[in-house]
Image 1 (tube, rainbow, N blue to C red):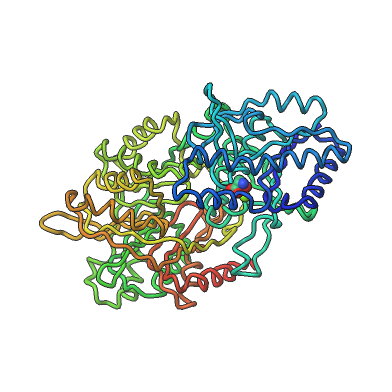
Image 2: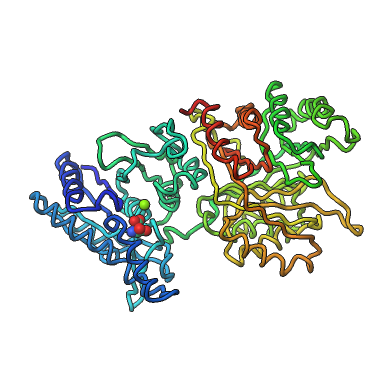
Length: 590
Ligand code: ASP
Ligand code: MG
C-alpha cells in the first residue's frame, strides 16, 4: 500500500461542487489501494479577502492577529472536504496544522517549518481514515502554542514537508493549470507542457514557476528526494514531474531552515578572457560567442557589465586547455567587434590562472545575506574577487588559482560543509539544453560605480543590502578598471525587485562615499529574460544561439549573467516580450 500526499489549491476547492469533485478523486485514490493525506488551501480567493478586511481596519495590522485571521480560511476547507469525503462513505478526519504536528519558527506571517511530528496523522491513517490537513499553517512549539502561517502560497510547502516527514511515495500538487509550461502561455500561446523538469531547473525558473509551485516546496522536495508532480484538478492528464537527485540522508529536524548552502563547488584550471570596450549595440555578444561555438569552445561563465561611455566589457571563463584557442578566436574577431577603434592591447585581456568557487543551495532563495556572507568569508581570507555571477540558487566567484584551496577551506568552514566537490562530477545526460524561458518585468538594475578594487568591497556593499533584507540576483563586476585618484576601481551592478530599488539605493547611498565608491544608479525600465536547462552544461553554442536570436530581433543586450544551467540577459523593458517570444521560438519550444 502506497502513501500519497495530495494538495489542492484554492481554485480546486473554490465551491461546494468543486470540493465534491475533489472528494471523488480522493476516494478513487483510496480505492486504488493507497493511504492518503490531503492538504488544502483556503477556498478561492478567501485569503486575499481576509487580508483586505484586516487592512480596512488598520494600515498595519498586527502580524499575530493576521495569522489568527488567515488560518481560518484553510480550516473552512478541511472541514468541508472531510464532510464531503465521509458523505461518499469513506472515513476521513480534518486536522489543523497544529493538530497535524507541524511546528514552525516563531515568525508570524512568514514562519519556516522546523519539524513535523506526524504521530497523530499516522495513527488516523492506520485507522483507515483519509487525513485532511490545513495547509499554510503551523504552531510554535512553546507552551503558548501560538499559531503561525508560512507566508502566502505556503500550502505547497505544507504538503511537500508532510510528504517528506511521512516518507510518502509521492506528493501530488493539484492546480488549475495542466503543469509546468516552457514559458508563460499568456505571452506565448504556443508554450508547451513539460512532462518533467529537474528541481534545480524549477528553482532557477522561480520567477516563471512560482505561481504554480512555491519555490520553498521545491527546495524541500529536492533536499529530501520527495517525488513531486504538478497536475490539473480537472483532468486525468499526467502533469509535470519535478525530478530530484537521490538525496544524502538528512535529519527531519530543522526541516526548512537547516541549511542555506548545501554544497561548496569548485572548478580549477580555468582561464578568464575579457573583451574590453566593445560597442554597446545589438549583435556583438552573438558574434563573439557564435565564433567560439564554431570552434567548439565550451564556455562556462559569461558576464557582460553595464556600459561605461557607450561601451561594454564582456568576460567569460573556459577550461584552461581551451584557453589558447579561445584567446585566438577572441583576438581574431576583436578588430571586427571593435571597429578597429580601440588600441589592440586594450581589447583582449587574458588571465590564465584562475579558479571558480561556488556555493549552491535552494535554501538561499529569499535569504539575501547568503551571498554577502560568501563575499565576507573570502574577504576575511584576503582573497580578491575578480568576477561574480549569481543565479537563484548559486553564487560563483572567480578568483586567482593560487587562492582556491584557501577559498574552499574557508567557505566549507563558514557554511559547515564537510566536503567540497568538483562541479563537473555532476552531469545531466538526458536533460535538454533549454527547458524553459522566463521573463521578469519586475526587476530594476542597480549599479554602484567606481568601487575600489580590493578584497572586502563586495562584502561591504552586499552586506548593506542584506541588512536591509533586499534580495538580489545577477551580480556583475565590470572587467575594466578605471584609476580614480590613484585607486583602481570597477563598477558593480545587480538586479533587484523594482519595489526594493528605492530602498536599496537609499541604503547604499548612506555608505558609498565613506567606502570610496562613486554614484549609485537605478534603472527601472529593464526586463530580464532567462533560459534554463540542465543540458546546457558542456553544450557549446547555446549562449550564442540566444544572443544571436536577440540580435536578429534588433534587441540590444545590456547585461549578461550566467550560471551552470541558466543564461540571463537584461534588455530594455519595452523589448522584453519580443525577446521572450523570439527566444522561445529559436529554441523550438513551441
Ligand atoms: N491560502 C494561502 C494563500 O492564499 C496559502 C495557499 O493557498 O497556498 O496564500
Ligand atoms: Mg498556490
